[in-house]
Image 1 (cartoon, rainbow, N blue to C red):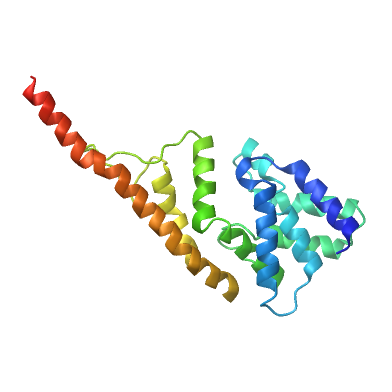
Image 2: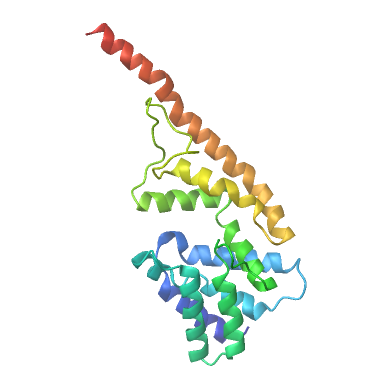
Length: 228
């Protein structure tokens, strides 16, 4: 890919950014991780890979405005239109579209090409480890969701069986399950390194928020009973 085409795609990507969790930093981390993964794989079309990485989240705004839409599906169509309208070959645009439309977790539509698998893995790495924790906290905060919820007895839930959303619930529901879903050996190796960081953070947070409820609640009840 030449500099002119890269700048064209980059400028379009920047114009489509819709939220702080899928910002320019996220796009660049996905691209850079993808390039590292690609070095360990067989023949890779770097033009397709770079274009797909740059454009994979261009429909986040559309999904935010209409949650019934899938940003991956919409983004693939949007990328195809943009590429063909700017002189890229339809065959090239189609390959980029297929990468984008299979980069998100959706049953029945797995990534097939090596470029699509690399994009999938690179994107998921940015949801793992410390960066995944930080992005999830930012996202949940923006939605006004809490760090944790309480059980009927007034103690802190670990998030495992919660119905209400919270960070601890999101960790148990999604983040803890990321690490067995990689297509490339390089990404799986990186993910294993990230896993311990995320798990330690979750366990430390749960301990720090649950301990006051375990001991402080009983102490408060005792003091109130003494002054009844």
